[in-house]
Image (cartoon, rainbow, N blue to C red):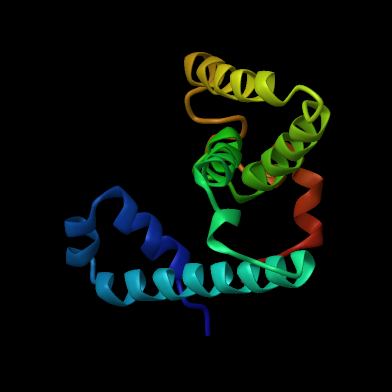
Length: 143
């Protein structure tokens, strides 16, 4: 059976009271979204610990949090493929700027300022990769 979780989450994002009136169980949807996001964060943390071998609280400073937020904002807050593409591009940019340690933390905020001025919704906005390249839709189906 098809469950419209995505449409329910989008309805809650737009207007929670209207979604509740339209018989969307907002508490259940929020709980599912929280469980899914925390589960994925746990899996990512486990994989990170496995790859690094040792994890301590100093591994996650403000710069690491800023990098994650830049990756999401750069791709677009409403686009999963945009966030993935921006994570790849941002990681490549960080590796290219690795020799320039101090300049790296000047270039990244400058990139964000330029993005906010000219493209405030992010690179992809609310679109997905299949919206730009319609032939990709034949490779997946969400029904």
